[in-house]
Image (cartoon, rainbow, N blue to C red; front, side, top):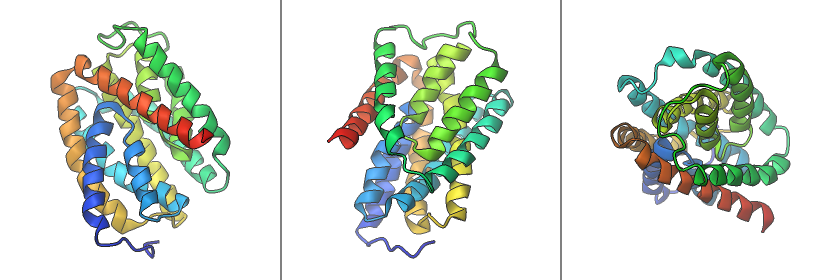
Length: 255
């Protein structure tokens, strides 16, 4: 499992990458845009890069969820149905990605992310306050938990953005609470996917733990900023990360 070596010069790079990605991911999602290229750049084959990325991101998402829960931004019991469905979807997605080619999904996702960015841009008050839910939590989590859990286990980039928009549009949450619950679902899919990748032997522990230590610090800082600064702080960063992930995926898929 851990037979792929990391060069000594890669140690500080992994830690700092995790720290920056953890901060960005806790605020707006898209941390995988930062971490995956670094892991691939260090020479990890794609299956190992995906599995190791799940290990390091699990540290950040767990740290962020802990802070959101302690601050009262989210209540873990309210997301229990989402956690259950997301776990099932993530397990299936992580199992599938080790057996199937994700090329088709990779080409379709940038268009969906571009739609999210456009919707957010033309809706100036998107997520600034709680609104009446359009869907009941049970049906909502059964659809989005399974779907986004599968997507995160199978591919991943932009999952947090999809969750935030779904929670705002479907359950009527403001951006701050939506970010908190999105991180709870991300944490679930990360941990479940990690278990599947570990079982498949596709995790480099040294790299994942180094990056994960930075993730914990960055995520704690980022979650604190979300709680103290509110939606006016989250919205521009959310848009920036959605556009950045979209541009990166378009570039990778169509160059």
